[in-house]
Each structure stands twice: as structure tokens, then as C-alpha cells.
Length: 478
Image 1: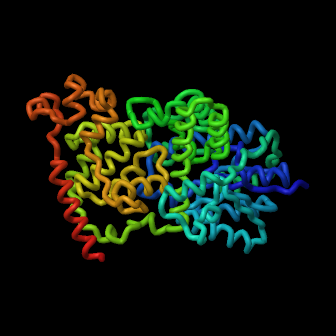
Image 2: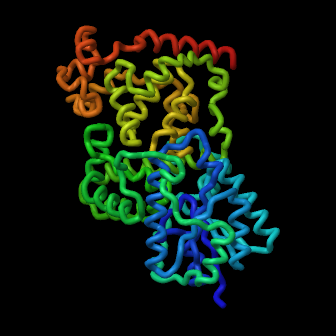
Image 3: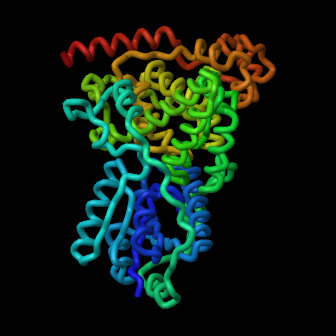
């Protein structure tokens, strides 16, 4: 009888370029996938219906891929430390393989699962798959963790990157008797997002699944990456890869992505294109930097990295927070961005920085409220990237420039000069002059006519107030 390896999928919802799965395949052809619907995650208060919808879509495609190559992806619901070892024991699996994660909850969960597997005499193996370089592989010369991006990038970019893993063409799955045993210990049909209580009616920016992610990568590599450095900051331009959700859930392998960028770089004869490719590679490195930070500093998930922000005197005005959430602050670029996220579950990265700066520096509201709201809406919401971005914007994170304040008007003038993005997401303002849109200098009469609110705060006043509070707390800390 062929030895069975159970492959536990989590943030690697694909067959191709999957290190754990490829290693299992070197040992046996009898590999069965399993995905656990974890109540701790699904019942959390920072979960987005759009994200669950995308995840379920990816699982559906993954099940189809497993069937196509002769095996199955089993779905089980429950506490992972109970259901995964129980399933492995029932199916007499030789081992459980899985890829590692950096998040505090995931690390705790995996520790429990592996302890129980060991107690049952079932082997396990784990691998780093979602990163090009594992956290302990990128350290300073004195073996310390990087807390500033630029030196991290210099080291990270010089390290050799692994190639995508060989393709898996054929697997052997469970027979009918084994499938019946699995169903007796709780395997179920894949539910819909609605079955789980998550309603998302709007189309997703990226179709779920491995194939759609590979097609999007190809499209980006063929077109937008050539002008990425120039176009990435303009929210009305389709100038980014939009692969963030696929990377979050591992619908595409990071080595596949890197290989594609390296090929463009090597084959390009233009400095402009090479600089654009490098700019996007630096974004991939930011992704890894934030994941390494989360791995080494799990306390980031709970609060500020910089000590002066641990007790910062935030204003936390509820009405202002609601206005920000709904895109009704009276600042067009801020409101357009928030409405984009509320409607499609995604926001352009430049706009993420603008609205985060506005919440923390203009409204003087705790960044953690914004961080959580993003996680409740974004279909690509990822703890490490979201937390890292918010702490960068709030100046509470690992950032050598502590006070970076964005002016919404100058940001709009620079990055939405024709007001196209604002018009798209604030239809009530479409008839206004471009200058009014991008400067935000709209008369009270025009605002009333368009049913658009007055600015809820004065940017200059709030900026001064934020700086005053920051200086005060800084003195107290020192």
C-alpha cells in the first residue's frame, strides 16, 4: 500500500510552485490536500466578506485542479489542532506536510497541531513557501533583525532567488472506502461564502484561482510593468499588478512571480524598463520586509512599534471616524478612495497612504481603528502588509522618518491631476471643475448643490495639533 501524505493548505491555494507539495511529491504520489475552515479566523471581527468570497473561489479552483490530476482536496471545519491530527490518524497518513506562516495566530496554531501529531506518532514537515527568503535568512552582519527597509532591501536583493518548483502532473487520491472514513470524521462539501455568513455581491477585482493569477501576471509583465515606475502612483491608471490577493492566499507562487520579473529585466534593453521592473521588485521586498517584521516582532499585531506611540493621546472622534469610513469627510481624494474600497474591496496603494495619513494626522484617530476597518473590507487584506502600511503612515512603525504628513490637496493635484479618479468614485462631483476637485476648494454653495459635505476638519490646523501632541509625548518618553 502506498504511503499517504496529507498536505495541509493554508496560504498556498495552488498546486504549482508549492514547495511543501513539491517535496511531498518527491516521496509519494499519494497526496491528498486538506483545507481547514478555522472558526477562530472566520469568527474574527476583522474579516472581509470580499476576502472570504475570493478564498472560497480559490478553494473551488484548487479542488478542480486536484481532481484533474487524480486526487482530492478535502474540506474540514473545526479547531485545526483537533481536526487535522484526527483526519491524519483516521486515514493512516504517513505524514502531514504544510507551509509556514509568519502571523502570531498561525505560529501558535501550528505549534498545537504539531504537538498533537507527534503525540499520535504521525510525522510532519514544514517549509517556507510564501517568501523568497525565510526570516532567519536575512539578518544584519551582527545577526540582528532589520528594522529599516533600505538596508534590508540591499541584503535581500543580493541573495540568490529559488526557481519555481517542478510541475506536478499526476497524483493518486483516496479510494471510496477512505473517502467514507474521511467524511465520518468531519470532511464536508465546500461551502459558499454565503453559507458561512459572508455576503459579497460585487465583482472581485481579480478572479479567484491559480489560472486567473497566472494570466494577470502575464498581462502585467507584458504591459504595465514596463511603465510601472511612472504609472504606479496614479490611481486612475491601471498601472499596478493587482496580484495582492493572489499573493495573500498563495494562488500564485512567489518564485513564479520573481522569475517573470527577472526574465523581463534580463531581456530588456531599456534603462527605463529595467528601473520599472526594479521598482516592482522593491515592492515585493516590502512585502517580505513586513512579513519578517511580523515574524520577529509579533507584538506589532497588537500595537505601535515606537514607544512614543504606545500612549499617544488620540482624539478618536466617533463621528469623524464614521465620516472617514463612509467617504464623507469633504476631502474629495480621501472620500473617493474610501468609496472605492467599500465598493470593490480594494484600494490603490497611493490612496491607502493618503487615507491613512488623513485618519491619523488630520483626524488624529488611532491608526489601529483604520487598520481594522481595512481588514473588514479589503479582499487582499493581509495582517503583515496592512499593519506595516498603517504603522508607516501613522509614524508609529519601523520608519526613520517619524513625521510624514500627506496633504490631501497636493496629493490629488500630483496624482489625480485631471480628477479622473475622483470623478469615478464621487459621481455627485462629476460636473465640477477639475481645479475644484483636486484642490478641494469647493464653495459651500456647490457642496450643497452636489449634496457633498463640508470638510470635517481643517488640514493645516490639525497638522499643527498633531505635531504639538507628538512633541509633547516625545518629551515625556525621553
